[in-house]
Amino acid sequence: MGSVRIRNLKTGMVLADDVKDIKGRLLLPKGRPIGPEHIRIFKIWGIPQVPVLESPQGESEPEAPAIDSTRLEAARKKLEERFRLTDRRHPAIEEIFAQALQVAASGAFPAVAGPPLPEAQAAAEQPAQPYDDFLKKLIERNILLPEIPSIVFELNEVISNPLSTADQMAQVINKSPSLTAQLLRIVNSSFYGLPARVERVSLAVTLIGTRELSTLAMGISIMSLFRKIPSRLLNMQLFLQHSLACGIVSRLLAANKTMRQTEQMFTSGLLHDLGRLVTFIYFPNEILACMGRAARAGMSLSAAEKNLFGCHHGQIGMQMLHQWRLPVSLEHNVRYHHEPAEAPDPLSAALIHVADLLVNALGIGSSGERCVPPLDPQAWEASGLTADCFETVVQQTLHQFKTLDFLLQVKAV
Image (cartoon, rainbow, N blue to C red; front, side, top):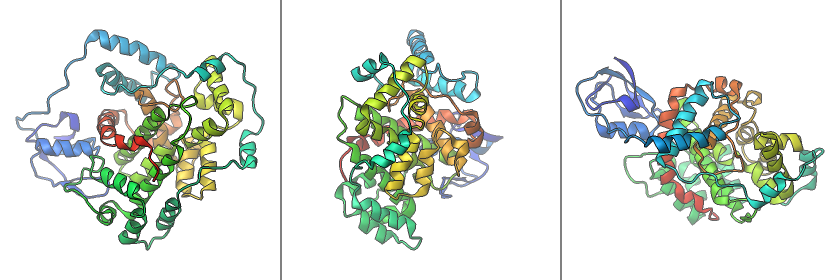
């Protein structure tokens, strides 16, 4: 019969080939009839479609109730404004709009970006002049970066050492009870969908992988540094929602491409707007001027940053990661998520580019961007994705986001 998309699977269909997760672990062998529990597992792992032999009579999962047409039309009008910088004719944007419309109209995720802050509204009325050599001044100023936890450097050493063991990794993580608790909650959530509960970090490392779990721990530790940003400048809760969702989507897109280092993609998505946090903390007037420029000129915030600063938050974020001596792959993914074609690894940067766009479209939190940023056609080509992947990705993003919401508490590790 060929491959069938997950949404069209019915119980009783028989697999024509083995179905494996992104680590190559067997989820269901060929020849087995598919039950409702298998469909749930496929969705947890972001499997977009599976090969089947036959399709006997069976029950598919119940369809979602129809959305009221009045609510749908109201949501459409709001989304059309949010999508005004995009090419709605592009197949990917067309499908992302359709998925965002369903999410917005159903109220599945109510935590959308709120109205501009008063400072941003005031800045929008003031002319903004370009800043000369902003990135150079940022480096020369030698700003006092938040003190990164020593555990992050220890984790980096673990990542760098190919001979590191699960026990050594566990010893590092166990130094922080908070980080230990957070990681175990992640491992036991639908983020991984493991068949049995994991109580020990060493077992989690064995199941997930030393490099993967250490990268995940680093991302969580770094985000905990920015828990004290004044709310008058930035709604940190909304920023964290956006960042977490980008991490989840980046990982799901990587799974769609059968990439193995998906935790690195999660961390890259989590940290992709790190540079914007720096501007809100150390250069509040400058970033508010950018928000004003974006509002007046009808451009994305990242374009306004480049217009005024000569650089954007991706370049600023890379500078931070470089000063912290963190993995170069993270630097590159953060630096090039707005110019994936220029990245040493165009695929990874392109997936984060698409993830950022999708999360902005869904309205999950906000990092200051008011509109869905334009899709880079080269990035879309480099990603190798197809538009039909977005339905599964969106469904799993909403589900996994709810199971990982404890990460939004921004506690120190």
